[in-house]
Amino acid sequence: MMTIEIQRPELEALITQRLQSGLFQNVEDVLIQSLRTTVFWGWPPPPPNNPCQALLLQIQNEQRPINASVKAFQLKQLKGCLEGRHITQVEYQEAVTELNADDSSPNPLP
Image 1: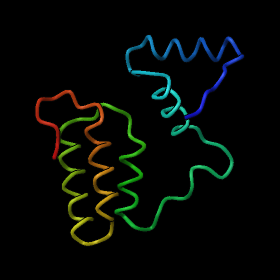
Image 2 (image 1 turned 90 degrees about the vertical axis):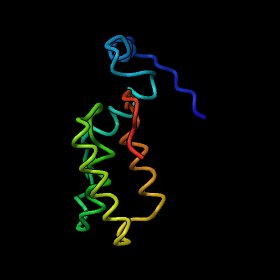
Image 3 (image 1 turned 30 degrees about the vertical axis):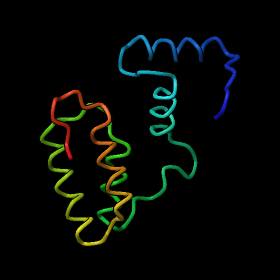
Image 4 (image 1 turned 120 degrees about the horizontal axis):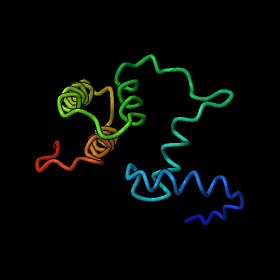
């Protein structure tokens, strides 16, 4: 667990603005989205040569919510990656969890 003290009023205002938009549930969500989309020297790393690793990276960095048909397509791709042993069971489960993260539909993906 980490405690962060915000001393710049403009940063606090930006975080508050994001929270009030309704797109984020808490400060951690705001920080995660910001850090995932921030580009700085040497980041993001070059895309992986393995298409399955590239898919995992895409799912991790996608904006939420995404279209149900896109989710279904990505899930099908993930299953193929898992069956071909290009990703681990843990990577597969994490990606499926990520795909279902903000799913408000009654039947999230398995």
